[in-house]
Amino acid sequence: MPEYLTTAEVANLCRTSPETVRYWRHVGSGPASFKCGRRVLYDAKIVTEWLRGLQEEANGGKVA
Image (tube, rainbow, N blue to C red; front, side, top):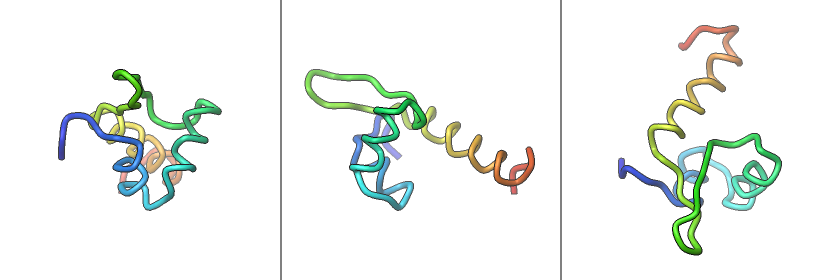
């Protein structure tokens, strides 16, 4: 996995659309991102931690 992911790559990883990832960014519920010029990037480690946190929430604090 690359060190930084684009919005489209995060969407693919989450099996959703880039528009949904943009919405998450807009409302502040998605993984942390930053701008590099005009492009929004996501640190792959942060995305992984964010997904793990969602999984823990869904499983009552336990990672399956």
